[in-house]
Length: 247
Image (tube, rainbow, N blue to C red; front, side, top):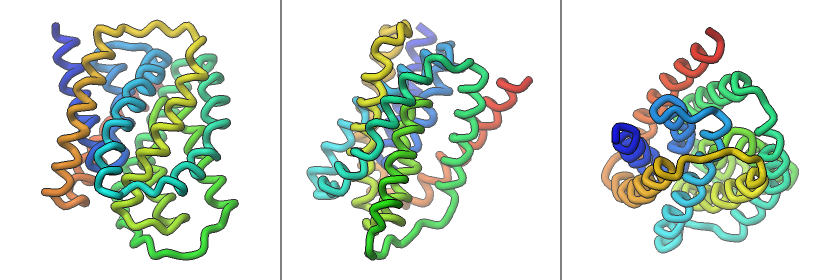
């Protein structure tokens, strides 16, 4: 019963972040699964992909209704990350748990720093296909290895590299996250990782509901306020995971 309650609470928080910020919440999913419900890092990253895929689809529907998804740009950006996501997803199951934990701590810290930095205004400009392709491939690799959607990387890239306004970058990032997460999950399908669906299912359901609330919350609060709250939470999570892996 305790594990179920913790899963529901953690899922709701992660959904709030994905729905409100277009990313960041998925980085909390894996440590929540490891430390609250005692999944192994390999199980947590696979379960994280399930949670992120379904939650991102839900959040994507809401943003699409508001016209904040640039479909062609998102599909092209995601296409560059599909193959890296599949390769990284297949390789992740063979990595030691300690290495996965350290890598995840580094990514969580990077996500926090990204959120605390001033937002780029996203002025339109010429797009360098090489930079766009590199950014998409890098995002796919991170998604495949660590089971995170990578919205904290996708949003800055869509703004800074492709010149999308912030609101559209958030919506479009959810399309990219969904495609990359599903590609990585497909690669892990035969990895043999056993998932406790009695935990994963309610966790995902709470995240899906939280994504709708996150979208509404983002319209009421300043985006920077929401970002700072999650950024400091991520820094604390990164420190905890690093200490746990090294000591």
